[in-house]
Length: 231
Image (cartoon, rainbow, N blue to C red; front, side):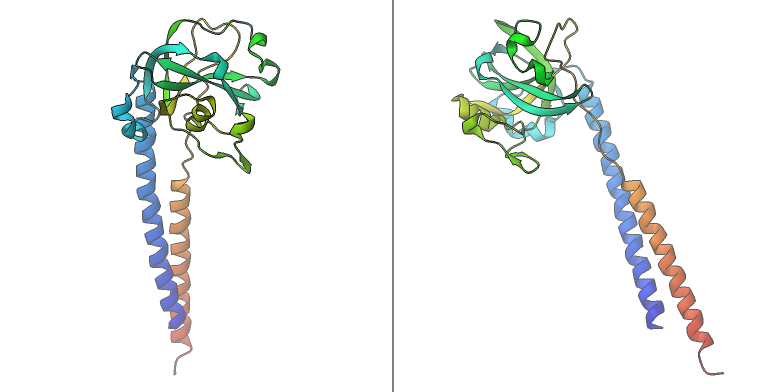
């Protein structure tokens, strides 16, 4: 009887875990739908300082900002993209209100690290940048810490980049620039991946399968218990 009771308890536990994964599946589907809609909506003005606290709610929202690039303060961050390995070009943009907004202008391969090798001069003067609002990546990459003193970056930690460059005030987020329709040369924008891992259905089915196995084991144990009882 003890084995049967343990099997039944496990079945209930696995059913609860399966139901939890179904809840997670619904949450993830809603998140993907929200992000996809926001990413393809018409751009809105980038949030000002009074709205910076709402940045997490606006991640992947299409925004636009106007200002002048500060190219001498660009930073390179290792990247792996559909075009291969290389670097993201992170360039601060000084907006009209004085706020600094970092822009991921796009991808360059290793042989295009130097601005002079990119095939087109960097944009000068006042420009309008459109792209997806993204949250910063503080600290560094996997097993590799950012080294601001050496200007060596493994993540898009825009706050640390601005501090190293002596720029302020800086927005606590950055813009992943969209692909320019008339782009010539590098960087290549518009490479943001809007793919989210979603294995919750697989997990739910696994838990429910384990619940069935546990229940079957409990039934078998209960039958054996009866068969072994007094004649």
